[in-house]
Length: 428
Image (cartoon, rainbow, N blue to C red; front, side, top):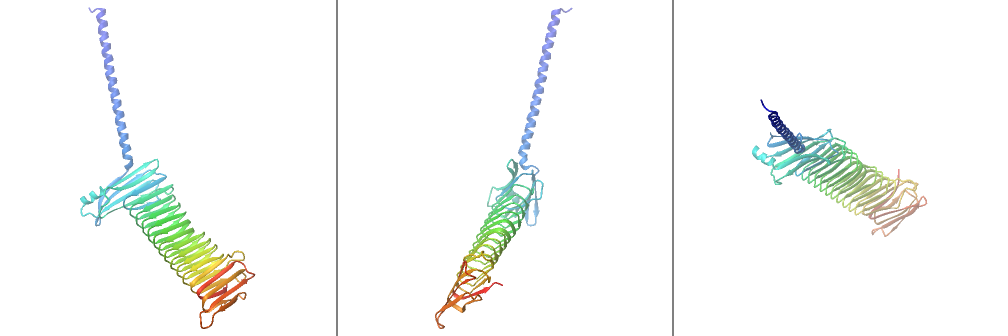
């Protein structure tokens, strides 16, 4: 029979063994928990790395005589969208609840293997962070032969800013309410249904715009510009090319060479051409027009008018205030329709050409006119208040002058031609 002491010893060993077993089980449990935590952390890290390329897919296929790698993807909606690429055209449309994109790299390499090597030279990244959504195309080798790319991006219409930069390629923006900033090294630009302000910079290429709902700014090295409507101020500066604007709130237009045509302007209008005709419609504000060689036509202006041309005819109709006109060679026609108190001091001067002046019959104005070498009838007038004199004989060039204070006199109208005839007529 065992003693009580032996029972106590046995129970003590059993107790210590149970404690050790429990300790080993607890350590295993903790190790397992730790392993699960590391696994979860690794999964989260993998997800974080994958976010920039979330929902992005790629495929390569043959298209005619070229190979195409098409990359599609989506990004969450953001207040700002920025697209930057070393090469390729970019089209942005405000027709999606998220940012979705289709990017097509196109290679004209002789084989699929060679095309894939070119595709690898252009890396596409798409990320979303606190500042906005970013899509980027970077070339590892900028000397790729017979290779280009196309970006088609759908975005929400209501954003703050859309900014696009490409080193070479066309730009196309439509159905966007955000501020639009676009820059291309060279390529055509298309704009329509834009509610925010627009600023475009281009190395050269034609620009076509439909409805622009705010201010518009364009700087380009060359190309024709055709704009239907600008609800804000239009500022156009091009190295050379024709400019057409259907309507604008106000406009400042400069071209190195080419015609400028503006149908309607509800504010002030400035137009300058290094060599081209200026065709201006109805202007609610002041007009400043200059061309080194070309004719100038204006349908109407409520503000002051200033016109300078190195050589060309000038036709100004429905002038509510005064006009300052200088032409190196060409006739001048000016029709003043302003009422009493609206007319301002005016000058009409041509080196060679006839001058026709229309004045309201009741307009108070003081006239000083001269033709250094008068042709035709010299100076003729429908106003009895003008006193016409001449110098010289019938066998030598005549100088003729007209002076008079019509309707009691008022602001001064000076008219001069070196060679030509001057004709004063009553406005109908």
